[in-house]
Image (cartoon, rainbow, N blue to C red):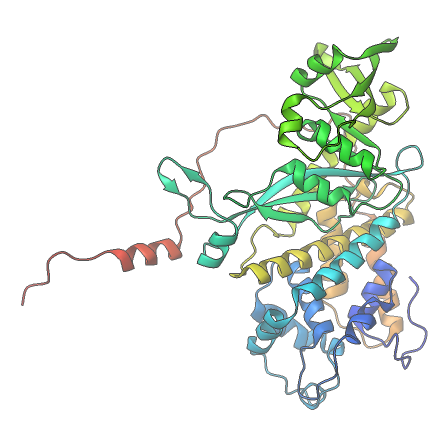
Length: 463
């Protein structure tokens, strides 16, 4: 760890939040830059920098309530607050209304910029994973939101023959770096309604934000011409799985160029079909992608069909695609382990802020995992994310430090503890057969109170 060397230096005072950002992200000027974006106010305690940090703290705590995070701030993190008489005298109220107001007033553009800078910085620091290039895995997921009128309008619930369901649904397109699990800021759109978006459209937006020298890896839902052509326009190599149906259609126009034991490779000048042109009228008349199709033999007489514009052998591409499932663990860690799928915010603006805070918090944990893995010379994914997250909270966040020496000792101890969170060596990944489960009960107090208010007694009570 490179800790601040001078506690009186205004650019790097001893402050837990700043030190944590400096150590884990390697961008010590980041928080200071945001502190300088607004004029100082003698009466304000929750300025932009501490409000941003508390948003992240809520998610690092696994979805802490406003009351919990404010109490933790006063007890353990008051050093991140600006100079203020109430803070100095220890008279700052534990009432969460001031923080809640600051969170609502924090411009969404500020936290978006903060999140993009953090995530992009970490992504660009990732080590090459395949042919001296980074690999980013794309996938889509959804989260349900509280059933407020504002959220239902922005993210309409699903519809069926019985009408509208209860929960607003947001569709997230995520991109995670393969080696470390570092996440870019997700693309968020409605899942349903007139303004909904598809996974290919979302993928194109997030591909625009990938760092240079990056390969795009995704499953068969993205193995279509429009996404491949967009990758080509952005100079991003791609590896996509093909459905059996698309493989059979494309192979008719392809040329077999190599056949080895367990693999067949075809060369294809990939052009859009009439149906794809109708769906994507902006495609140029000469739109085409030079690609290779690899059919790789698997166990149990199964085959894997892949399309790519990366010039390498099919076996290597097949081995790379085996890593695609890593993003399923990343999504689980982000949504379930850190409880980001249960956002309590009731407005669109605050939902986005909490979601961005979740991504920053997640990336802080992946960085600690990366540093701990380096300590014992293993790949970051060999360490348990949930185990590292537990170490992060109990060895760093929930303890109070008075000096840099105490912080240094605690940080080194946290690295050693996290490095011991190794996952077991399994020759084969665990298999979980699909089982039918009863549908989750979704009746809430909100629904009961709504039904109660809409119920009218047809006959008045007797006198």
